[in-house]
Image (cartoon, rainbow, N blue to C red; front, side, top):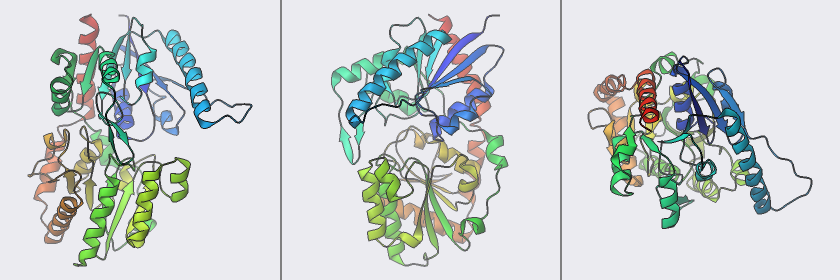
Length: 401
């Protein structure tokens, strides 16, 4: 039987939730039915995790003879990248192109016209497709023409949650038959193993109650809300002097890195940490190849996002039996209920601080009912089952054309 050729487009093969989901999916793809390739717009060491399961291509960095302006370099880079991208696609000649992220609208536009079927897996609306484009501290609406073009490019959508399908249908007019909700899942075997042991002593966190968040250090992910909540909790001085707030993920772990990435939002957040005197109580870990050893040291997991399709880190925390405090946004309430976690209003530092304080109170009281229920609930969200559902979905899409 002829194998189905699938080209996965990974906008950024880093250690984000979308990238971890792709790695899990490739691990369980049926090699007797599918021949997999991966295209990335740049090299990241995370791509080495994909190479055992797929042929990987990444755009080689371009060196220029002259010192062009940033804007001109960007234009030239996009031109070279487009040419390279189309050449690789011609070489692969895929039956199906699978956009693992909706971050790069250009990549979708570049494949037209093509005989291949186009599928977009919606991990979140925040990075452009079918949603508002995020500025550093607010939102701006994209043009109607831009929205119409981007939502019409994919032949089919896979969403991480039912709520995402409702948004696509209700707010953007995408036909329901073009959308298949397949809930995010995690590799329970990998989470349970916590392959690399890490101790509090090694991190110098002994005697601390660790309240942590995972994600890009950004406005959308609620980094500023997390900082404000930390300030409110520490200001109460109600026996919380030993609390340590930790942000894991993203490329920002210092002011120097914030300047490199030209993130005024991150610089403002770092200034607030200093201004509020949070330095001894706040740690930015930056990006890590394996989140689980660090996540396993959290006493409380926090999802402060202003918008979230589902949030794979939340599922990972639940599987590690860590109490979760999450904002009731996007598809998050489909998994986290009052019985297995603490839901709070999105974008509210006061509500988030109240939820964190409640979780700390439950820990001190020895109340583990929500934690145990969360573990039981997340056991049903297994990556193997998710991969089987996605493979079946792709097979149906191809044979329905």
